[in-house]
Image (cartoon, rainbow, N blue to C red; front, side, top):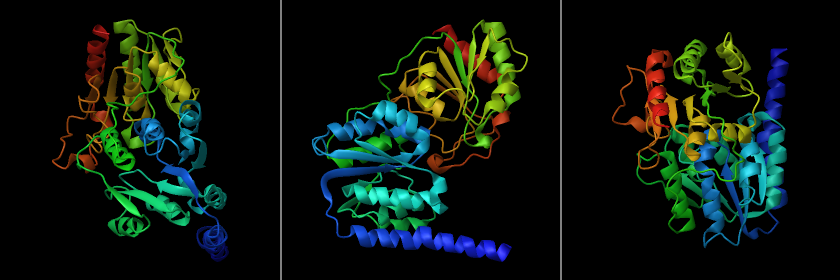
Length: 375
């Protein structure tokens, strides 16, 4: 059975990754590219999308691209926010998942991207991924613009191979930049003009003020989550000592975390919305709060974009690249790390070995008390 399964997997790989792309290339090689048609490739996570999405507006209104049709290939996890908040600057969307590497959906995606007949493709990511480079390589286009970045997401040999797939590689500038500023540098180079954005922003939301503390206890990486018991005790202290209500949030697959945290706490003081909110609804709830307390997750970047004070509970991964923000971008974020964490000289590429649960409940509570005292 294992031999048959192995043969089937090899045949599937051959079809999806070699035969089908080659056939599509043969078909579309005879199609002329559509001038002033731009495909932006950004299939990253939601947090990365928050730090990138404002530059779609910059691109669309720039002198170089204001007469272009702009299309976006992004992660399917960004779909709710992209369609509802960014359609003004994007003429069409394509959806991607990391799981497409060995799925038949990849052939459909490649066919749709080839049929777009884009003249220019840009992949404006500093830490590129080879599977995305590979997609760019498969699509016919006159101009292919990438970023000469680092090797956080792929070995050097893969990066060098991917470099050859582009007609131009943007110099990403200073190694030590927060990701929002790095994106700014990249898009200024692409558009050939200055951008005046100083921080992420989300406009056009329907926000109802809830006068609560929002807690986001989830996160895609379990190693970056504070324990449910710690959040439970924190909620009890916030409610009993500060007399403030709590709204608990998290991803659709994190309902069990929400149940553990809320167990035994009165629903009159704690509203458990874990797994119940769309991405846009999460933005609205955070935007109406007095304070967000969150693991290092998308919720932190949403709060920054909505000017809400943030306490980020972080183990220190890639310190300074995403969290914390420099004060020049945002000065209402308190980043709390384990006592054992000390940023290295090369901090932007450092993965922390510290444990999240080294962070005492008292440190987070005291930070919240300090913020709410003046808010």
